[in-house]
Image (cartoon, rainbow, N blue to C red):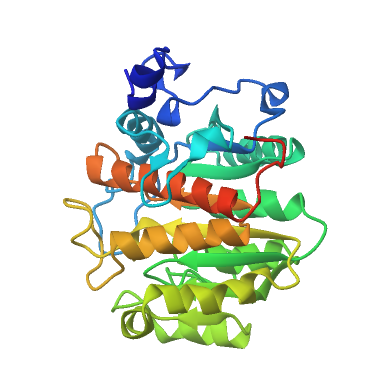
Length: 334
């Protein structure tokens, strides 16, 4: 049972055997089922290859994270007392299941992510994706958004690292697609993803290199390192960043790498010290929703982590609240 199903006396829809829908919302199994929804959630159950300084298998089980987050989400509903708002009275969220991730076939996997994201956008939905690792949960989503969009795409990225270098393995010119490089490939492959409409928030620490900052500067992106967030506060930083992302953009994307959070926020998983707090994250997400972000992507959500799943659930509900309060759901809803 879920919190919502207990209150309403209803059963929880299943995405598949043993996996409930996120927050117990209705399941959309076909593109036709998306009609009338305001927001579609799509799981991206992708693990990842090794990265420098880590165990070879560290990310391999992250494909389980969308199912785990769905199970943990059942403890939550949609009411926010500080806003006196139940998001499900004003917006219809549906769970559109998972993209098909084919082991050892990145192209086929990216193709199904593209299909699922486009289905949702074609139905008039805003989109939340729940992953999963690089390149599927970030590059795969934003390139699908860009191909479905006629005008410029703005990007808001919260990440401890600048993923904009040509190669993290020293093999220049190879068009490497992975951790540390996917933003470079994003700009190369999708000319309408405009670097001048890119805001990068939360970079910090010695897993970055000077080349990353130089790449952002060369492309006239807007960089707000973690030290600036700490000095000025997230409300001031996000208020400055959002106009850079939205002004003149046809559509916008919020990229959330969970490593932007401080190491203490996610016990047993936190990746980098001196990061943002849970409050910082929720404020940024809610503000982006009010501004009208089109697609929101969770990345590197840890499997079997009630702490990560709690943040995902909170962020999704506060994002929905932002969309509602910003007037970005359909006017006939509620």
